[in-house]
Image (tube, rainbow, N blue to C red; front, top):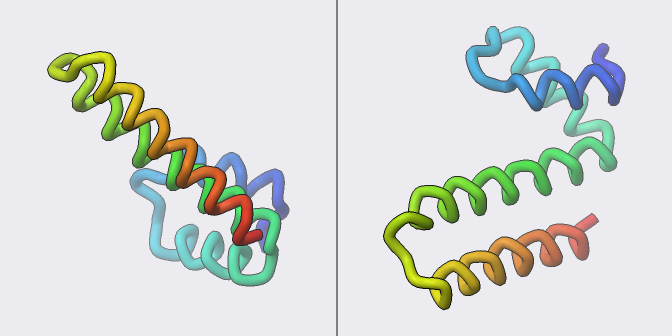
Length: 82
């Protein structure tokens, strides 16, 4: 069984994981509410930053502010879920 500390490392390097590792991570996330909340926050931050950086070169400052607000709103929303 993964420890919380191990899970954080595994999630950070979550690309190209074996089926067994992914299953081990999912099992831990089902049992640990703290790691589950962490994983949700990380997912929302990754999505928000991907969107921000993919659009940043072609957007105006107002659009960038809207994207920042969306990321923060999603982050606040997930904090209320935990």
